[in-house]
Length: 178
Image (tube, rainbow, N blue to C red; front, side, top):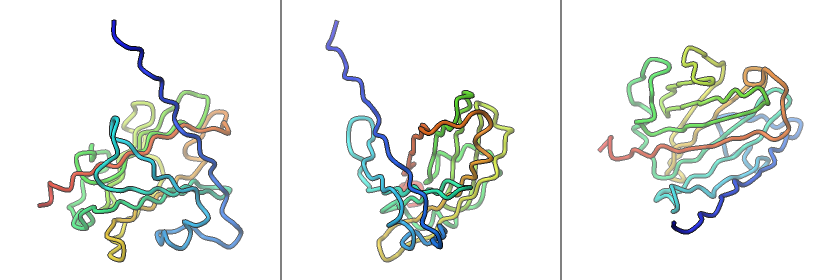
């Protein structure tokens, strides 16, 4: 009844702790060399048409995620803001699915380049986490740089595990601005 599909095993990455004195902030080029780079993104079974690079690091209190979205229209930065928890996946932006503990909670975070945020904790859209997103146009490389700060205390309520599950998605809707 057809061929057996190969099971895809997601890659594992080590998230380094930033060295003393290095501050992760919206200036991605200043801290990315201390982070783990992720650039092997897929759309179904093919590579996406626009390059994306993510950088992940931490300190004792926060998980830092920087994303460089090449080719993203810089007008996404000035799009009118939506109310919090609007389903903003229809615009350019990021989605992160995160499972940091054994208690079963899965977090679905959506971040827009204009600062929009939507956050859902295990299907509860009324949950509002205290996390941060910033973005800026990086004209030197033709990209929009995102910077997210996820406080550990806000995302781990049960027993934390050393191996978190994360799915990072880029929503590339460049045509809606043209």
